[in-house]
Amino acid sequence: MSLGLKIALALAHFSVYIVVALSLWIFSQRSDFYTHTLRLRSLPCIYWGYVCFAIATSYEVAEHMNDDWFYISQISGLNNLFYSFLAFGLGLIAIGLKKNTALDILSVACMVAMPILYGANDSKTAIQLPQLVIAAVFVYKWYAVMKDWRVFLYLLFSNIVGLGFGIALIATGNQIFHLFIGPAGSVALMILGYVAWIQPQRYAEKKNKKELL
Image 1 (spheres, rainbow, N blue to C red):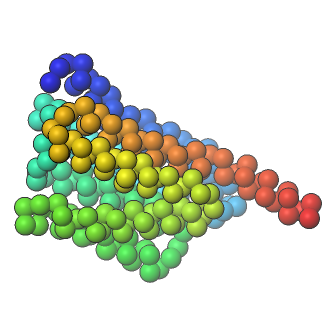
Image 2: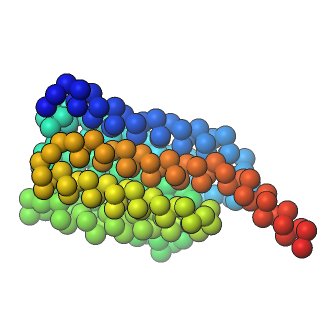
């Protein structure tokens, strides 16, 4: 693998840190709106969820550094921590957005199941169901709070586009596909960050329209 591709892969993965920092900043800047107007369940829970995404990326970067940035589909402790902290991030943010006892229990169950099921029968197959379930709960909670169709684009980029590049990478062994997996997840989080940023303005516009009627 060329040095240029290694640098590009490193930058692609580090983009997640930038998006996480930006998302934390957005929620902190809009904290009054989300605390007193939309009355989110727990902003600290959401903050910790984003921190978990950064931690997950750190474990992924550590594994790639061990493999000299050459992608290898393998079962390892670092890879387990990567998937587990992704689930923790999704679950914590979902729980922090809005209270729903049934979905909250489901989120916690998926968070607990992820590190336990990882590597069962020497594969990652067993974690696919909790991954899908917690992602669905995550997006549903976002939509329930934000009422913005763009939140569904998260699933498009993180699950469909990202998964597509991952399948292409494994099937062909061409490391260039690895370059696009991280940015697909970053774009997904950026879309949610944008929705969170414009929400106060959309809320005010809707309120004004109701008053005019």
